[in-house]
Image 1 (cartoon, rainbow, N blue to C red):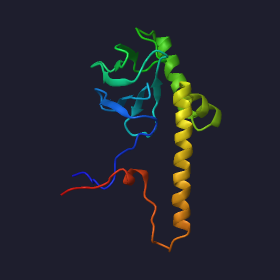
Image 2: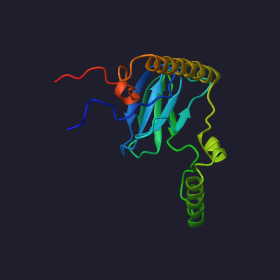
Image 3: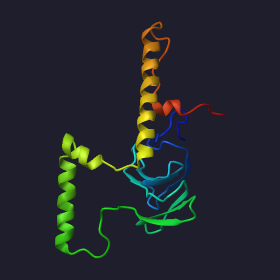
Length: 178
């Protein structure tokens, strides 16, 4: 039986309400649709999104779904459109020659080998965001930093052992019923 005292994961990149979440057919990834006019892709065991999809015309996104072949994502937004997105936007579709496959494997191995380097990590993690979402995420970051600072000050100025640090995953569980 699963331990319900702590969440398995907390996904933290949206800046507005999440309207829909769906697992991929493989169960290794999630897609989420949000009121902040973006669609985000997540790996199951990571806390931050691996990709963000948005367009200038797209309004609030109310639904998102994977196609059964795990190659595309469908999203439905407030503007009345259904959009089709590639699950891996940078990969080319179609048949690849042996040389292309070999080059792709080599490129992935290079990224994997040097992913700890600051420049490689910066390039790999960079995602263009709409101005509204970027500004809202900056404001949200400042608010979270202030909350963390306040909790740390409370911990410093209270008796030893009176207030304990709770992980983010433990904070998400409010109550369990038997």
